[in-house]
Image (cartoon, rainbow, N blue to C red; front, side, top):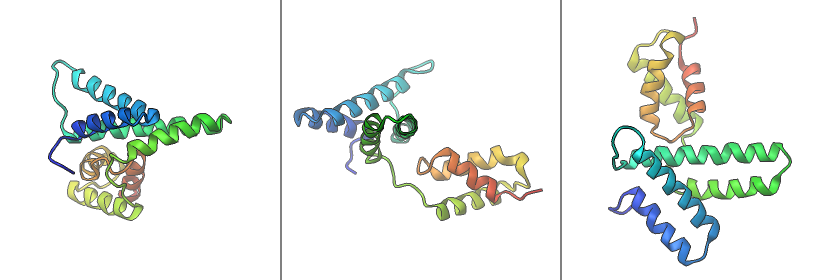
Length: 154
């Protein structure tokens, strides 16, 4: 990555896509920038998002596309699912590589050890520790499953 922020990278990629008349890419990046701006003005005061915050917005948008593609496929609408999957592929280019199940299990085990959790009652604490280490490289559902598996049952 260059010195510019992730948001600036998305903005310059949008300009490139518009010049190339790549409507799918331009539309997807426009939606992402809208989501980023919405996040910036949410709350009491406007703020510039950090790259980590922008990654969270990108991950959220990617998750929406994945869920929509699944819903369209289940509803027998493959053409709509294909559009969502194409948008997802564009978004995934900006996201860090996803963690493997083994890497996720290791992070969950370390989170359990670092919090000293003894059972499901401390799942919230362990999730917080694990999410920090995961930093957007895995879906929350996968993290929760790994944490559940790592917690002592009893």
